[in-house]
Length: 350
Image 1 (cartoon, rainbow, N blue to C red):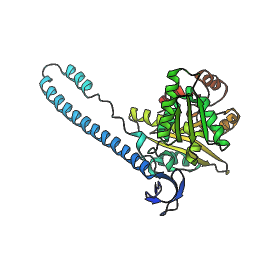
Image 2: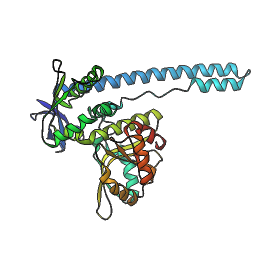
Image 3: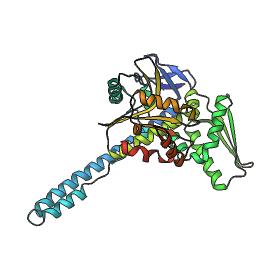
């Protein structure tokens, strides 16, 4: 038996559908992703232990702060008649604590209507009707971890990702990577990456043949995985990087992915990511894992139509470098960014 959890109504149920496929929720008729039962339980345990670890850290951090505050109060009483300025400096230094990193890779906290409300209010103010897919920001699967792994090793994986796009587009099911002429360190790194992606269920089978030094992969033909390798991995990469940077800064925000908007004249467009920091303009991010130059005119038209400031409309392109991104910005009223400088680019807008 396989299992599913509906992001719409929260129903968890067994099903006879094969895992890595989709099914219809028995309660609300929503499309749901079907998981292997053992894999699902492992994922739940992973999330449980991560949250337990975070809760423990938060409790310890809170206890330290309480203890520190008590010590500060006592030292303030003693220091009042001696050196108030010195006491104030010590208090500021002692209580300056960094926030504890949340388990952002393992949560469905963002996959709900309330979390999307600030973005909806902004688009409503522009007379733009928006349709949200709340499950598109459910981080409890392995898409975000896989995307981080790919994005942080893109220079090594770029040609293999192009091959995967071709294979998926032509319904091919196997990929062989010949490592015989590669340095040993590079071969080992490729082995580690693809084995990890296999463990995340991004591939149906992983084998390394040490005799002929070849990695053999059987593709996972489930639609969500196919979509991931055809390009949505870059959206997941941008999503998790935004979440981690915003959390590190301790800011409040609203975030959405795959937002379909409709203008008053009926024109439609899909935004890959919309990110709205509290009390700031939203950031609209277009993610392009392959060729994008044919879309430049469309980007500019949309930017003007909804009056997005240039600095808030960003094209994240995997196959360009910083020099190209800087040059494109001189030519077009849109911002461009490569993978390595994404966080640096959005940080001032958060």
